[in-house]
Image 1 (cartoon, rainbow over the protein chains, first blue to last red):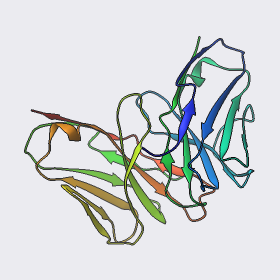
Image 2 (cartoon, one colour):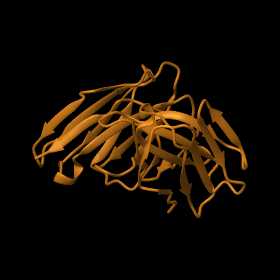
Image 3 (cartoon, rainbow over the protein chains, first blue to last red):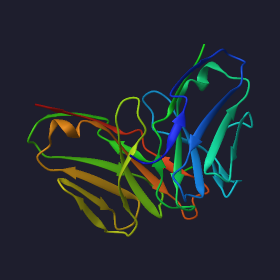
Image 4 (cartoon, rainbow over the protein chains, first blue to last red):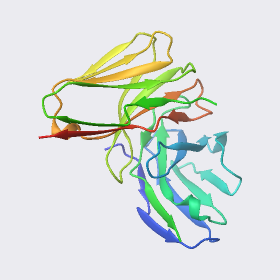
Length: 112
Length: 112
C-alpha cells in the first residue's frame, strides 16, 4: 500500500475528446510525476510537478498538461485524444525531487 | 537520450531454481530502482541503490549496482510462484527533473 490513489481505474473515450485523470499523493510528498505505459512497454515519463509548478517534462506534446494542488492532489489532462493515447497512466508520488517514486494503481484509458 | 535495456525479456523457470535478470545502460545514473508490477496494477518499489558497487538484500532477492553506476542486476534465490511478475528497472538523474527512465522489463513466471 503506497498511499497513492488514482481515479478512475478505467475509462473509455472517443478520439478527439478530452480527459482528466486524478491522483491523490501520499501525505507530505511535494513531488508528483505522471507516466504513460503502453502495452508491453515500460512506463514513459510525461512530466513532474514540484510544489505546484512543472519541474520537468518528457517527450510528450503540449496537449498533455497537468496541475498539482496544495492538498497533495494532482491532475493529468489530455486534449484531442488519439488512438495511440490508449495506455495505463501512472501517477507517482515522491517525498522530494530526485527521491524514490511510489506509484498508484494506474488508470487504464482506452480511446476508440 | 538515456536508455535502459533489460534481459532476458521473458523467463520461465521451475519453483526452487535461482535466476538473475540484468539492467544495462551506456549512461550513468545517480540512482537505480527496481520495481515489480502485476498485470493492470502500478509498479511496486522493491529497492533503490545509489552507490556504485552497492549490494542490497531483500529476503531471497539480491540487488547490485555496477561500479560505474551504468548497470544493475537482480538475483532471486529459490524462486517461488509468488515471485511471478514483471520486473522493471528505472534509472534516476539528480534532481529528478527528467523523471525515471524505465527499461521494458523482464516477464518472470515461476512454475510450481
